[in-house]
Length: 339
Image (cartoon, rainbow, N blue to C red; front, side, top):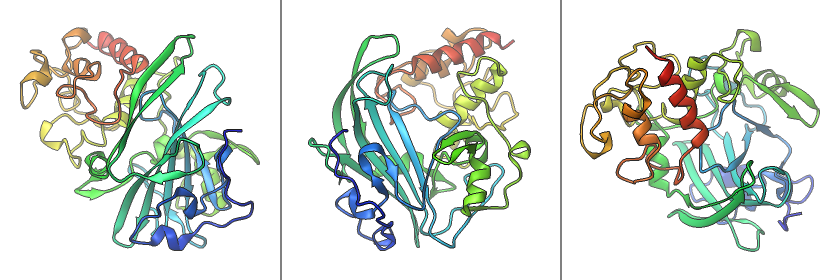
């Protein structure tokens, strides 16, 4: 037990609070959890996961989706599902004390909400107080020291950054409109261990009545997990770049002027970086010539920026303060394989 005050059993989601133009000061006011201590969702709030999550300083993440009763999201084969007004996407960031025992001594850091209101999507970050009683609204963001023991038994630590509202907009933009990033068919098409039994997420959403128009999972797109060594290396690397970079690096994204487009279905080799010269040289390029230099990851700007923690060089620009070593190793292996 982590010491949280749980939402009373049987409590319903507070739709009025979700639709209010003024965000609640406390996360508990929304009624999204029946047991916040164990991240147990309230009735009508479904947990979900992504095939490969976006990297955020090794934080563990608990995701949930709430679609109001009687409403359904419309399936999209390529982009984020078309969620109805009232939909809320919940993402909690947490650090187990020891990653080798992920269910024990978990410190919950923050819970972010994406709420689809009448005028569009809105984002709010709630930081859990020191007594771990509730999440408190932090519009201006916050920096928190965190530490954990990694899978190799080594103690790690960093300054975890809760983004401010403007920083959220920096990534969650599609065609100049605020939008979610993760819940696309290709990222959701996997099995999830629901309390009622393991099931494919797309099929479960249809059965739960919150999604319409979806094909069977076998006919829906799917990306491989980054750590699935049985899968094609190129597909694993492209899927990693898709979830970590392509929300900005695409024609409709904030980094469209870079000409570097990293979406899963981008088939132009130059556009996804193959011997592509940067639009703007400078310190970010590290004096290197190409975004991806085939066979030479050490000469690739992509690797240079992903393994940097210099604010003027690193990519992504927000969302991390550490280097994702496993991701870098995957991309280096991939670039070494390219001719």
